Length: 101
Image (tube, rainbow, N blue to C red; front, side, top):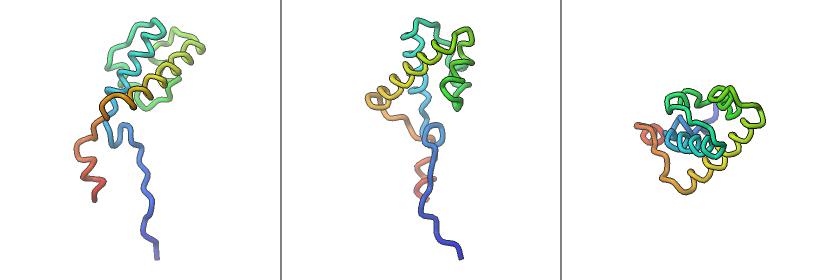
C-alpha cells in the first residue's frame, strides 16, 4: 500500500509565475552597468532556462569569461533587488487553481 504524498516541489519561476519583466529588467541593468548594448527582448527571453554564464555567452559571445562573470554578478544583484522592491511577478493563468486542487 502506498502512502499519500506529503511533499510537492515546484520550480516557481517560469512554471507558476511569469518573471519575464524581472528578467528583462535585471538584464538591462547588467548590460548598462558594464557599458554594453542590450540585446532585443526576444533574444534575452530565448535564453531563459540556461545558466547565467551560458546565457551571457550566447547573448554577447564577443566578451571574455571575466566580463561574463561581471555580467552575471550585476544580473544577480539587480534581480534580487527587483524581487524585493518591484511588484510581485504575476501567476500564470490557472496556476492558483491548479495548486488548490
